Image (cartoon, rainbow, N blue to C red; front, side):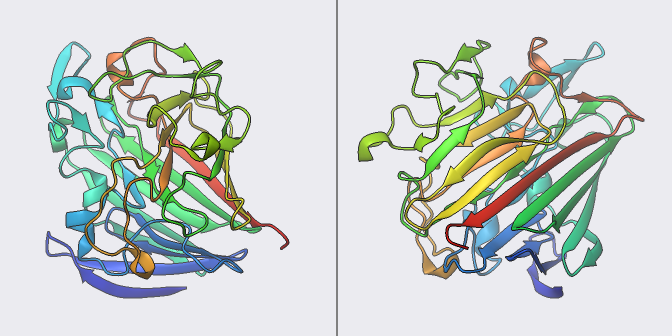
Length: 337
């Protein structure tokens, strides 16, 4: 385990990073945004994630690379919701809507490093009542740990002092072979339905079966079938279940080119698959790479988007004395190893 000063955040606080390792994986994690900055697998020559070698590009050019997003991940329609008969108005940072906790959500703040070992690190952050418009103070804790056999495990917790909305998501972009796009990566998602979206990327309210559509990933297939771009682009929630549950495998991503595979296990009811189709980063990333369209993809484990405004979706409301908990694991393997 290595802990070192890395930079100074826009708020003037010190940004540190911690290196942890185990089971053939090595990760570099920053306390700005509780961010997974870099991740390597023994025997594979390239990073498994998108990120930057230096801190300075993150505030200006990152698309939440590697960050934990919230207090409420994904979109909240019109930046408002009602809870207990009171309407709460959130920071609108995506047109007229609220996205990933707002302008100063948890992905853009400096966390405290509470504990660390050679194979784990725990970071905490507190938000006061009213931060970005959310009711109630909230205390967050995120732990990264290597649990053996190429596995990186995340444990995300939150406690509130009055009823509020909490929906956290890891926002890492994966690329398992170091090529320019993830088009030829093969993806499986264990979901029989997905949420169609409107022109602003918000759920329409329909829960639509994937069968017979371009959203059917129940059998592994290339993200771009036949070597051509899939239509439409993907930035949708896949409905894994209608409630939170036990940690179970829900998706698998692999690169035939590199032989690297990743399985995703989670306790969450939703998985947001974003294919990186809007990426266009103007500064070099890890190893000097330029991140253009579909340079990496996200598999964001989460509650369903805009659930606070959709009573038929799994609820994202959290109450005092009943902490929020998400567990998500990524297990990497390399063919022939």
